[in-house]
Length: 361
Ligand code: NQM
Image 1 (cartoon, rainbow, N blue to C red):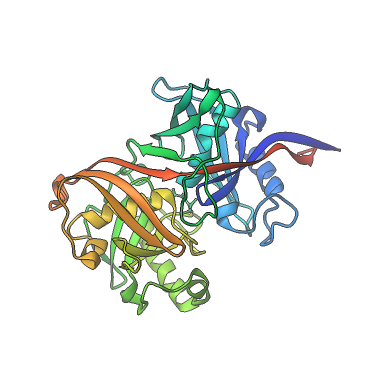
Image 2: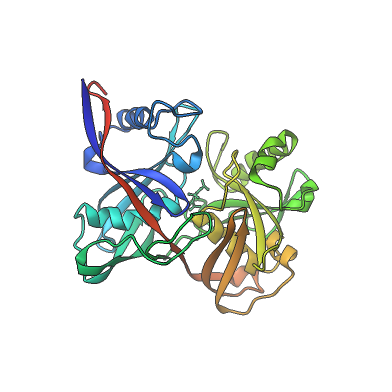
């Protein structure tokens, strides 16, 4: 006998995932995780027996509920369902899947739509930080269609503006968790930063790379992967993340000079596959490191920045990611402050229905 669990499939930014109401899933975490593994078809590198897309970027889950807080409308828990392991992790946030949360909450009636546009205030449970997503709601209906484009996704869609309010140090306790703009790990200069996503920035040239290599080329380089993983395990400890052997953070971003007119170029291990683009909060962390003197990224781009608002264009394998930032103290590590980070995403509702599982699950 099968039973159905109400579920939406949505593309959020450059990721795709399953969106559930918290009330539709078991409250017991172990039971919930077993159920999600079964729905996704994990562990199996093809996820052939489930809804997962056989890549970390398409094996994601959002669990959404009405917020218990006064300052936000909905709570969002992000879960990364491993593809080839029986593992479900809440150790990282996801800014791409976040792009679908506002629309899902409105579709499910967790909050009322306003006329024309609705600002959905979202509490991100993984990191205890908040964001506001501006959703187009003409006639109080969510609008997905429009002319906005984001690199890494074909076609156009309605824009979703996301403002991050307080993400600095949200996983590691501090924006620069090691207390430095730059450290050396296993003889390699690194910058460890957490502006919403723990990321280790490395100069691509430290590994004799140009930085324009394709994700497939990087993933095929086992010597490189071993070196990067060794640095990651040590960085995790120094970033207050403990033993990160089985965690998907920190992400490892290879930085090189811009190739397509942006500010900086990236290739990001997330942390074992290489991202086809770059994560949302990952790019906010990279953009933040770019503007502060003394970081690995700032030394590569060789530019100084004045206080105030700026657009930072982060290049990635399939285009660019623009982060709007307002910062102060870019010439002084002690005084450096990020006042605001915002960006554009789109989302698409792909399916609404029920995920079918065995009635005994
Ligand atoms: O950094 C991939 C993604 C992400 C996470 C990853 C993300 C973010 O592209 O906020 O969006 O780094 O695992 O969805």
